[in-house]
Amino acid sequence: MKIDSRISRIDLHNSNLEILERTPDKLMMKIDWAIIEDYLEADIQEPVILEETQLCITGVCNETLEKRYNGCITKEDIALVNDRFKCQIIGYEIDDVQNTMRLNIKCRNRKNEKSQWLFSFENCEIEAHNYIKLSDFYKGRISNYLGEILSA
Image (tube, rainbow, N blue to C red; front, side, top):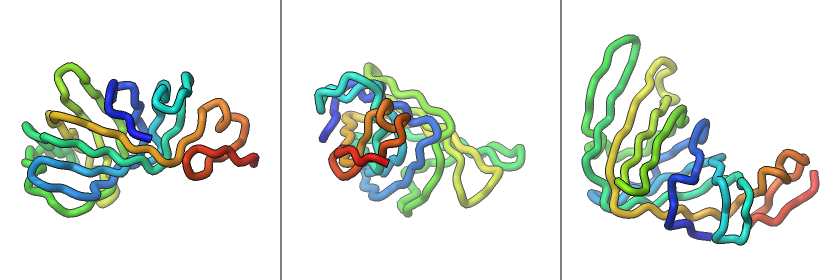
């Protein structure tokens, strides 16, 4: 299932983030355990947990990365970083009108390092394969590929 409108309805707080691929104008990210307020693309009108979801963001520009480590603040151009990294999203803001994203992240490589990553984009598409309704999750059920529900 693909989601390409109203991206701001996704809740990324406490999700895991991994950069999968990066080109000059495209960013592929894997997000694990995001929640979306509705999944109308699958005719679901209640919150849904998205497991191992891919975000394909094109037209990435105006990036800044502000790192905070042991009281020191440094700014870097994240566009120069091309290798994979993993982190946890501890705060975020997505603006569908301005097409901007702010991710506050905590990297696993350094326990005290927290960063704020800001960027603009032309398009963002979410591709979800595994998902489960939040109400089913609270009932102790787990998801299968393409959202089939398995009883726990």
